[in-house]
Length: 275
Image (tube, rainbow, N blue to C red):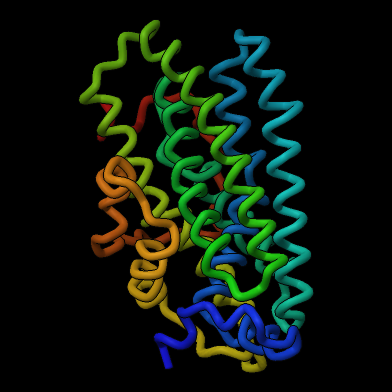
């Protein structure tokens, strides 16, 4: 049964049957819904980025006028898809839950010390998202979802290229060493595995009632089931496999105090792994 839920259905099946298959695919639900929540909080981490690059007018204008509007548009598209495909799921409540968790974490850490490290974090995030959307564009049973994911994957590739150029300039200016950059990148991957996605997963699980048409999954089980799917359909290259190797390890999820609020400390050098 597990392999059936992870394999794409015959593209020639009638739409009503395909919809049933899509709705019953728990890993697909968690993947799309988590993506929608992660996209919805882009302004939270953009605040820190905008602060650190505030003296770069061109980069600031691109973030505010192009990157953030694209993130907001795709968040709405993904939200609409989740609400239409799984109407029994309360997306708005899950989003509110997730935002509360993110706020409690100060906008989702780790907090990076320099503009170069923050730009590198955006590169890593775009690369990770690109892999997920590339996988969805080939794996999902719904042609509409495949087309949406393919377009988002292209946008992520464009965003990665822009952030990479900005990062290269900043890294040279700040004399960021290769070792420091590598530690920062790996810390970003581990933070996504241990903080960003688990918080989204927790918010999703809190809103999954008994009426959902698929078995609910634990986070560790979700990761285990998605690894072969991503390897097969996203076909990550060797650099991606090397960078994202922490996803193959066991997540280390800290306790999150959801009700405790604190002001974000965007520009304090508390990322010990990158020091």
